[in-house]
Length: 368
Image (cartoon, rainbow, N blue to C red; front, side):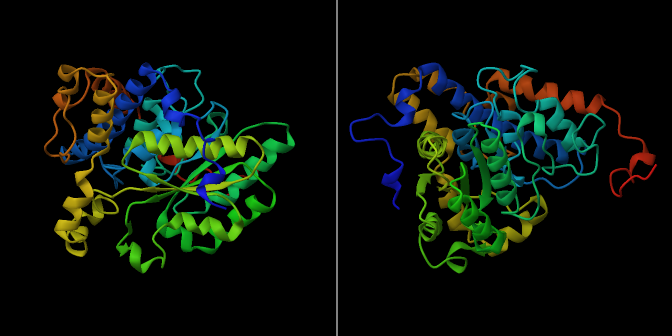
């Protein structure tokens, strides 16, 4: 079953052409927000104000922003370690600070990163092993692809209750070699469950290049064995990601079952900041430079300028693209982006840490 199975009918506009100017500018701003979250945390750690491992989403922001933007509030997501901005970008369209939206706030996410009492994990982890049923976010796991069977279960339960939610899961391309990936997608295909599996192909499964992971060019071809659509998106173009994911979501919501969307992107840094030095050795410098040339912010900026949504003066503001975390400053980002993240960080820094005696709580079943 090819990509044309879920594509818009001939003569119909691709999904992004139905977005308003305001939507497109909001998407652009969310790219800045995802990038600023990344580089700001790196700076905070270097300043000694933050501990723990960071998993950078730098250069992959179009995947998370483009895939989330068109979802319904009641849809479910299961972000992984590379998608930390997804926790606060879910249902955030034009309402970042709305406490009633179905997602997590920037204060909660920053509290998680800093290990404070107001975090979902209450200092048991500083990163992405969080989730919440009321936010329609499935708890992430270090076992990549491990959330796909959970997503299938969530979709099945929602369908039994008469719901129409779609569940979007995020996975690295390396996870497609795991047995649970195939078992879960086969189950979703057999039962026609509305599960959209996004494969973030950033060219490296930790230190293993894609040509040593899979014999074909496109990981989306994994879908062929299950008779479901497999789409390929330019993971650096937020509007192409939006188009492909919305096609897959519409296909699932119509009762046609699951699909796979491969987003071809590039990991700017190491697997985590603990791997940066090692990554500089196992990844050729030229390849890294080539992979980072197509910055998603720059690609989005050029399109908005071409469409007339940005003037030349506006397009010349906030040049965050093409820079590493050490080179960026607050002036490279819109003021509202800096202000929003400052609120989250200052809230986290002012929050208390959980009491030490809580350390053993929720580890074993409490018997009264």
